[in-house]
Image (cartoon, rainbow, N blue to C red):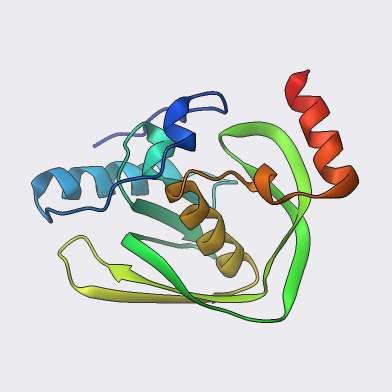
Length: 159
């Protein structure tokens, strides 16, 4: 159990789709504990396993004082209503850009013991669910940017 270092853009693990969890065992329990301890810091809304160098479909969240996790998540619902607020990423420190996400979202998967789990959220929680599932698919929020915001962020990344 420990707070794990965050991998940053350029690390191939961030661009590799994560593998499904197949064993709900002590190794998964240790990973979930590490993810939950790693997300338990001010300014952190979510941490996906690839961000700590583990290529498995697991993430933790820390929204409105609630810390939890989801294993093998799939986004099953997205509202037609959207939000277009600044989004950032621990793996791309210091960069924020307006990113369009569904205002409301549902993600389904499992808890650490393999029991079905359904997470539903609006606003920040919806943004978090979509952002973390993107990580598990090998995508970063910058991939969703368009127009001037995309140009600005790509220039900053080239630095």
